[in-house]
Image 1 (cartoon, helix red, strand yellow):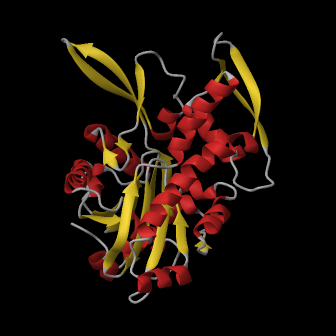
Image 2 (cartoon, helix red, strand yellow):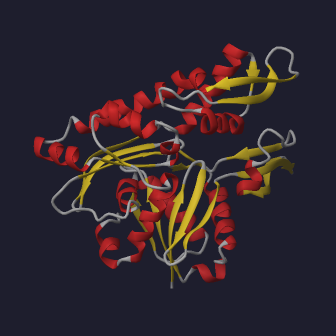
Image 3 (cartoon, one colour):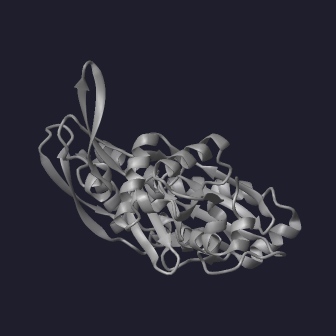
Length: 337
């Protein structure tokens, strides 16, 4: 019997297999060609995962790049099932073997029963055996390689591409928490608008993400510079400009400060005794945006709470999910129907 931890993210899908580690990290993306068949629109899948993402901005007119998952919800169930089946095939779990595989899916805290059922149907379409769900805050804390305390509350902040999960947890469950539609993807969209409006340069989503990851910084003395290529907004001709950390600092802090508002909203609801425990233990950070230079220090300063930063924040939750699926006690205690 194989066991998997699956984080079907809006931007990237991660799969962890106990004993093997992270076995897949690939774009949650499908390239489809639309065509007419007897008056009905049909979809022909042309590429999955990273190969599909690579076509973004380069595809033919009738080829569309789709993300089956958005803000924790599955938008295109059939395509999500095809994509997950493709990923499972890549890690040598074809449909005929999937029935002997158990999987835990990592979901945003507070997700509706309707959305859970979508994930269950996708898993069933792929032929997976037993399917479990756990919430991001539990997986994220376990991904730090720490046990969830019985007596001391633990504070998790996970910032992904389209979702941020904020929660204070214990072994009994979520004491206070929320999931909000904010993440690194919002920064990417704002960067696209910023360069078009103020620098007359049109760029795509992949270029915006690369700019954020290479130049973006919240360190006071950081001023990295990168040349960004795109098209002139007015003429459409190829163009490029040099962009520095200081030029996009405000774009980044606009969204980080919004996230901090939601963090404070959760913290302000805590009883004094729980709040004291959180201050002592600090906040456990996870999610791809945490890799941004200076973000952990910025959060620590603004929240006035110690931060715990994992080595690979983008993988923390799926690794923690591996801990959940590996142990019968955690599987019983930290999964939801």
